[in-house]
Image (cartoon, rainbow, N blue to C red; front, side):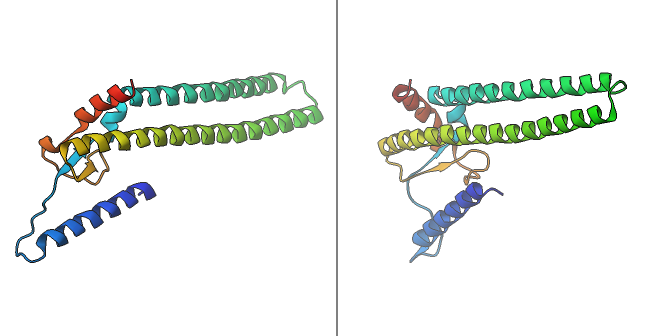
Length: 182
């Protein structure tokens, strides 16, 4: 389980526990009171203009990095094919030299692929963090308009296991999102 998911589950458990303790203090039955809303962050990402732009940015960035990797892969395949074709006419010293060059190029390729992968991961983190910051602002505005005290993530892996459909403010958040971030 990732740290982020584990951390969210812990926060949700503490919140539920606090609500249960607060609601049950001085009475026999447990009843949670308060105004709660639900939001699906995946739907926000997929259906809001800002979410679509974030996904497009990540796709473009990833494709550019993938193209660099593919160029290097193509070069390595060409080197390998040339070596196989010429292996029978090369001297042992020339074979050894070609093998060393190929190994060095392969190591460089692997290092570059790792660096490009890290770049993609960093870009993904930056873009999604920026999107989450916007989500928090817009969700806050919609929540205040409805007098909600808390809004819980109802997406897969989120802390909400069940919620009445009328608690879901995702569509309204998407509309507000699209007004603020066209």
